[in-house]
Image (cartoon, rainbow, N blue to C red; front, side, top):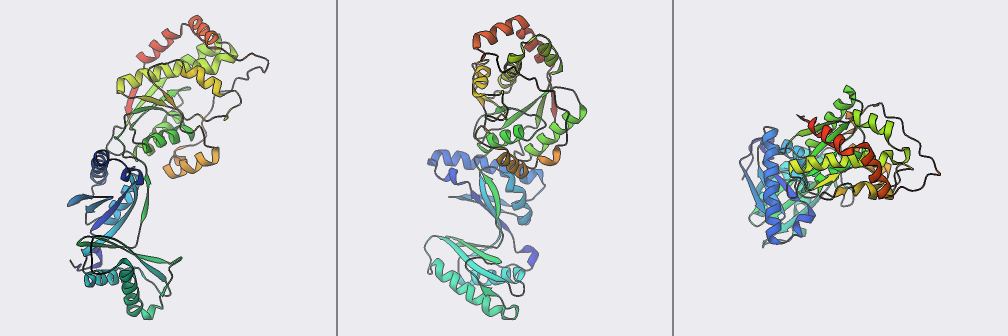
Length: 396
C-alpha cells in the first residue's frame, strides 16, 4: 500500500486499550470492547469525522479514517483507551515498512534532530523487532545525512514507531495519552452532586472513569445566575468525557430549605441534617434515573467540623443507595491537578458562599437518635416532598 501525498499518509488510528480491559475474562473483555467501540463511534459522529471501518483485535482497535490525527486527538477523552497514534498502514514486508518509515521521517525530521526507531511485533515474520529497528535506523541515517541527524535511544527528539501485526504494519511518530479506565456505560449510573467548585466535578469524573454514566444534580443555594451558569459550564466540560450519553442536569431549589434549617435546627446538627435532606432528594433522583449510587466531592478532614462520624450519620439517612466519596484520600493539590486535566477550572470564578456556622467546641458529639428527633420536629419529610415537586431538569 502506497501513499501519493503527505496528506494521505495517516489513514489509520491505533487505539490502545486500557490495561485493565486486557486482564478481564474473554467474555467481559468482549463486552467492554464492544461498548468502547460504541463510545468511539459516538465521538466520531459528534465531531463529524468520517471513517471507513473500525477493526477490533486483541489489545487494539484500528480506525480507518482520512482524518486520523483529528480523530486521535478527539478520542483522548474516551475512557477505556490508554493511548492513540495516527498512523500510516502498509504491509509487513520489510521493503514496504522501510519505504513508509522513510516517508514519515522526511515529514518529521529537522536539522540536527535525534531519533530512535522502536518496533512492536505480533506474529511470525522473517525478521526480528531488533533487526527492523537497526535496518530502518541505518536507512534514515543514510537518507538524511545533510540534516546531520543522529540516533539517540535514550531521549530522542523523534520516535519512529512501528507496530507489526501479522500481515500489516503501522508507522507513526505521535502518541497521545488517554485517560485509561473503563468505557463509560460498562457500569451502572450514579447521581453526582455537583457544585461550583473543584471537588464535586473531580469526584464525578473519577466515577465516570470507572465506567459509570453520571447524572449531575445541583442544589441551588442562592439562585444566583452566576452559580447556576458555572454549574452548567462544569457539566459541559464533564460531558465531553462521555459523548453520546445524556447531558441532563437536575436543578434543585434549596434556598428555602436552608432558611428553615438555619432558623429551627440546632446549630451542632445543622450540617448533618442538611446533608441527610440532600441525600433523601438525591435518592429520589437515583430511583427515577435507575442509578445505583450517589457521588459527592467531600474529602476527609477538609473542614474541622466535617468528620467521619458526620459522614456515618448522614449516610444512615438512606438505605437503598450507597454514598461514594472518591476524593476521600486526595489532598487539594491532587484534586487541582485532576481539575486541570478535566478542563473545569475555566468554568469557575468567585461565587458567593454561605456563611459557615461555628459549632461550639463544648457540644457533645451528636447521636443518630438526636438527629432523627430533630428531623421529626422539623417535619423533614414535608421539606423533602416539597423539594421533589419543584425539581427541574435541563439539557446542557
